[in-house]
Length: 113
Image (cartoon, rainbow, N blue to C red; front, side, top):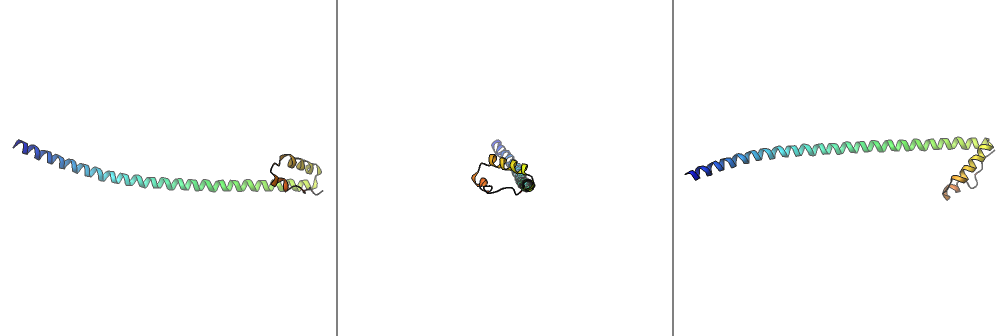
């Protein structure tokens, strides 16, 4: 009889623990779902951040290119009317251009005076 009571108590305790375990697993499933949702949100925010950074980098590169074009135009224009600047420019081009493709652009170039 004592064994039967102990068995009954053990079954009741086991049932109680199973119920607790089921509730905890349900809560864990909800927490996992929330965590997955937060991870997706973090991934989306990182993607937005990266896209914004890429657009800014592109704008910066465009602005830098535009500055180079404007400076080049100003110097070339000034070299057409100022022989000292024309000589300086020719000297700088001869000494600083390393790539053949860049040098080829200026082989026959002469500032118009």
